[in-house]
Image (cartoon, rainbow, N blue to C red; front, side, top):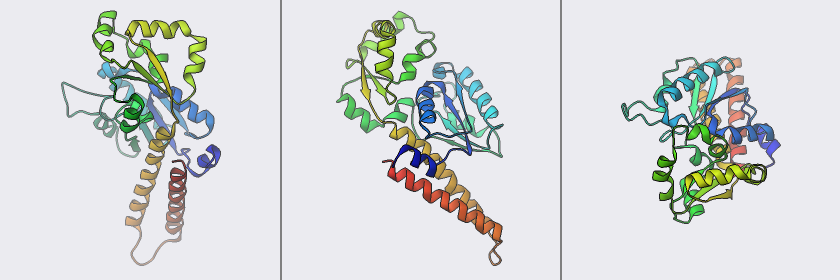
Length: 262
C-alpha cells in the first residue's frame, strides 16, 4: 500500500501527539511524508530521562497544551526506561499520564524506549549480531548536548567503551548521509568523546508507524465497546446506529491499513 493510501485509510487528524524531542526527526519525517496528519505534535526537551523533575514538569505542561487541540492524545514515550524513579518506583510514566484528568483519551505507544520504537528487541539483536553495542537514533546525535548535558569526559570513559561493538545508529530517515557530509567534524568529535565508532544501519520506520497505528485502533475499539454498552436494548436510536457504523468502518479501514503496512 502506498504512503498516501495508508494515510487516507488510517488518519491521526483527531489526535494531538506529545513526544520526547529525541523522536522529533522521525515524527517530523512522517508528518512531511503524509502519514502523520495529527492536529498538533508537541515535544519535550530531548533527553530529560536523567532530570526526572524537569521531564515530569514538561510532560504535564505539554499534555495540558495538547488538550487545547484535541481530546485524544498519543504519548510517544517509552514505558520502561524513559522515566525511572529510583526514589519512588511505583511512580511511572503511565502514572503521570493518568493523573492528567478525565475528559481526554490518552494512549502511550507500546515500547520501552526510543530505540525500541524504531526496532524491536529481535530486530536489534539481528542487527548487532550478539555484540554489545550502544544504540543511537538521529535525535541522540542531533541533540547530544541535551541528552548528555551533565556528562564529562570521565563519565563518558566509564560508560561508552564497555560497548565493545561500538555504537549503531538506527537511521530510518536518511539522516547519516546528510549529516556526515554536512557535519563530519561533529561526527568525529562525538565518536572521539565516546571512545567508540559510530556505524549507521538503515531501517524502515514500519515499527514506529505500526505503534502509532495501534493507538488509533485501540482507541476505536474502546469507543465501539463503550457505545455498544449505551445502546438501548430494544429501541435503537438512528443517530447511535450511524455513529456505531462510522466507528466500525474507521476501525476496519485502520486495521486494513495496518495489515497492509507490514
